[in-house]
Amino acid sequence: AHTIVLFTQDLRLHDHPALHAASREGETVLPVFVLDPALLRRSARNRVRALLDILNDLRDGLRSLGGDLVVRHGDTVTEVAALARETGADTVHVTEGVTRTATNRAERLREAGLRVVSHPGLTVVPPGDVTPASGDHYKVFTPYLRAWEAHPWRSVLPEPDEVRSPEGVDPGKIPARLDEGRGSLAERPLAMGETAARQRLCSWLDSGLAHYADRHDDLPAGATSHLSADLRFGCLSPLEAAVLARDEPGGAEFVRQLAWRDFHHQVTAAFPDMGIRDYRPRDTRWRDDPAALKAWKEGRTGVPIVDAGMRQLLREGFMHNRTRMITAAFLTRTLGVHWRAGAEHFADHLLDGDVANNNGNWQWVAGTGNDTRPNRAFNPLRQARRFDPEGVYVRRYVPELAELPGRAAHTPWDSLLGPDDYPPPIASPGS
Ligand code: FAD
Image 1: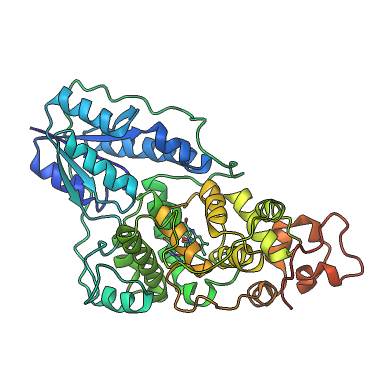
Image 2: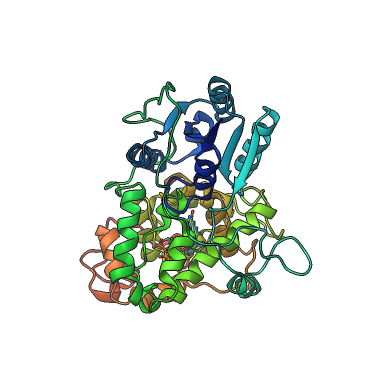
């Protein structure tokens, strides 16, 4: 019999439990990806553009193993059900997701009469594999991390030797471009796909990881892995990355970040409304301030460190973790604007934009999530001086400040020769 493997956020061949199981179980495997307009419309243009590269790479990989990637355009469940009818397949293997989209999709596939087999692969430790004595998920990171570290990991799976696909199925076209999605496009797109992701991982392990513990917060250096988009699309297995890194210098700190990723995924699995409702409802009165929100989005708040982060986002479709925290705190705590407005703007631009990580982190910063210190003080100016001591990061992204030397770039309002094309701060940046 034929077996379908439905690819979603697991766009790779290495360490792919669903593909591995299907290639052993069925005689022939039908690897399928559906370009679903309902999802593309809500995505970021940056991610839609990346997706096409990723699919081409995945198709090349499957072809080199003897198979092919079947691409369809339409409602995912309708298209998969049609392929099942066409080929006589009755089983669909999937990597288990945590979002409402993922659980609804699995449910609807079952309603369409298909046998759905779910596999791990989205996280290092599957959501639900570590649970506290009371409750179905961890609400706080530190106890989660302790349990996570004590939990055994499954073995990393190799790429399959061969993928045999049924004859006579139209593989379908991967469009050269798709004009869908939200937000603006980054200037220089990153090469995307499993091949590029594995190269990035290799060079990170060779020459970046060892400095990670010391430099992950160094804003001008940008010395983090830049693997978040590869993990977001599943071009890399988080488990494989964790296994390769854990015993290397810097590995413990890096693996701890992957545990944060797992943490937010297990929260989202248990609380799928993470993107629309407060995880820990607080009595916060949010301010409706369209002008401030617009200035924040455009990187024109007059607070250099905030503006630099926001412009990095627009220019690169990426922002350093430290400025993600600073800009999110500025919006929610200093300006008092609802975290959802900020999370939406991030989701519209981040190449790594991801339901679990984005909303989880936004709620953490806003104090509506799982931070144990929801009233943590956050002073943008102090952060700027600490993590960008010479102002290099700020001048890189805010050209109006190019003439201000050293740390003076953080306080243009103090300078007699302050730039006249840069706005005064819309709120106090601290001192
Ligand atoms: P590295 O420092 O090299 O970390 C390695 C990997 O660990 C990352 O690729 C990522 O997968 C994971 N990771 C690191 N930090 C976190 C974290 N705090 N939470 C969850 N996973 C983490 N990350 C996303 O992948 N998608 C998002 O949409 C996203 N939105 C965010 C929004 C806000 C407000 C904040 C504060 C953080 C957000 N993050 C998000 C987390 C983090 O900023 C990025 O994962 C990180 O900056 C990506 O760069 P990197 O791959 O070089 O990270």
